Length: 83
Image (cartoon, rainbow, N blue to C red; front, side):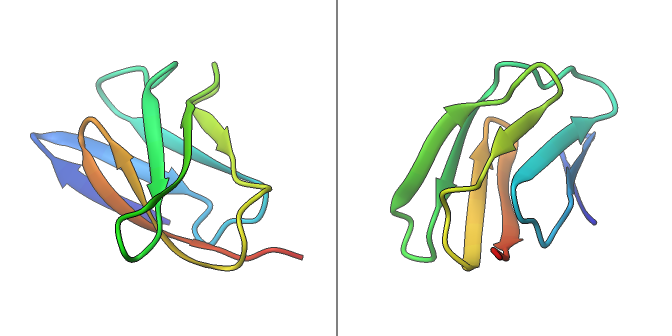
């Protein structure tokens, strides 16, 4: 599990590594319908979506690899494992 502190807000991204979905939690703000960009190591946006009502996003279409998740609070590193 990865926890990154930005602007006094604690963000938790789990599971990490992930297979099908990742979820983002914050102890102060409901992260529902937030825009999320998933980028490769070059900064190219691979997937752009909104978090669902549970604070999750599907990553089923991503290949194995290291990605960066960009949300208005900052950028978080995630690892995707398929199969």
